[in-house]
Length: 199
Ligand SMILES: Cc1cc2nc3c(=O)[nH]c(=O)nc-3n(C[C@H](O)[C@H](O)[C@H](O)COP(=O)(O)O)c2cc1C
Image 1: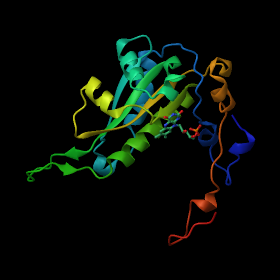
Image 2 (image 1 turned 30 degrees about the horizontal axis):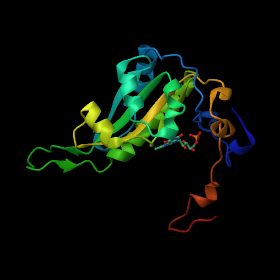
Image 3 (image 1 turned 90 degrees about the horizontal axis):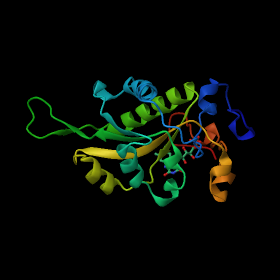
């Protein structure tokens, strides 16, 4: 999908501007094989020392696991995300046991690595004609408790996955936002040599 707000400053592969996060999903359940293909892409993300700290807990629509994940969502996300075909919690291991050290050592890149895995997941979904929408708006303490997640794992986002539905099913305020958004100019994000950014 190309829009006026999605014109890159430099020519790039269209997969990057065509990926976006819709809220209207069809309500069809994702099949497990398709979900595994999407998670397989995440598996091949790069990570510090190849520690692969990312973990995924999923629920397919229509299952108790999906309902549990949906119950943790913030109210604004509960207005649309339960129509997704699957929900996937992205978390990462924050510590590891290093031979010769008594205390577990922090995995300093765990969040960076989980972010890379999430993007791989999103681009694989898009390559299959599906969409992924990450949500930071969920109750982390509740999810930790309900899903039995130990303290040495950090919870990052619940991702809604599925086929794009009709925007008319969304609440009016969300219908207006159901389109790809823009980005800051590259000049505001990139500096040569030192911390000096344009606007
Ligand atoms: C870590 C993270 C948390 C997000 N949390 C929410 C959320 O709680 N609810 C929501 O509707 N969108 C959420 N989003 C979606 C962002 O608003 C969206 O990715 C951003 O506006 C860029 O739009 P795009 O993904 O369509 O390119 C989140 C995205 C990320 C990466």
